[in-house]
Length: 233
Ligand code: SAM
Image (cartoon, rainbow, N blue to C red):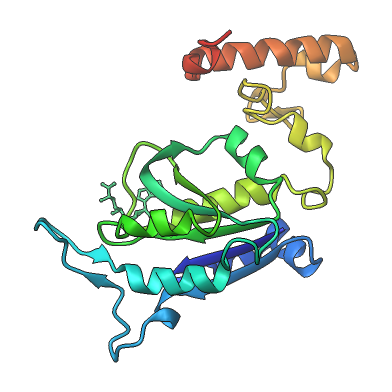
């Protein structure tokens, strides 16, 4: 998979050289490129923002640098095959879930555009739709200062679903949200730690009993912490 990220703070993404995604990049499974939006400015101050039409607080990201970035990274229809999926993180977008991550992990080319200030001139989204499939995606119902942290989270959630990124694919199947439930509790050695024993069933060697206990724990946890996930049951 190829991923292009456009940001005015490219060094946010230095962390993606670490751990599993770093290894995936070294192995050529993930082809990640981070670009500074200011590369596509032409004035002395490399300006990317301006005051909002109609007044109001804050600044808005200018459309011109974004237009040039899209021209470079998502060439006109017909030239790129398949067309990229262009994602703008936004608190006003659809909610990012494990289902979204699974869907996006099947794409060949993702382009992420990180907003800052009060966001990006609205016409950019319309223009981007001539270059690929546009998705406005929210990390959650709160407001961040910029799209970088949201894009980091999305790349990590999507990246670990690309075949070959996580060594043991079994570990992906049992995780929270994969089957609409939260994951069961996990324990490791020692069997008693600071007067706290590991649940006995896990030491029994009885795989059927362990599976049943884990399922019950999943349901109990989900009921207690995230009843909304069970609402569709
Ligand atoms: N004025 C915008 C609004 O009320 O919808 C918020 C702008 S926010 C300060 C600046 C940028 O941070 C956004 O353009 C977006 O890229 C990013 N951002 C903020 N909250 C986010 C969230 N919950 N999910 C994804 N991106 C977010």
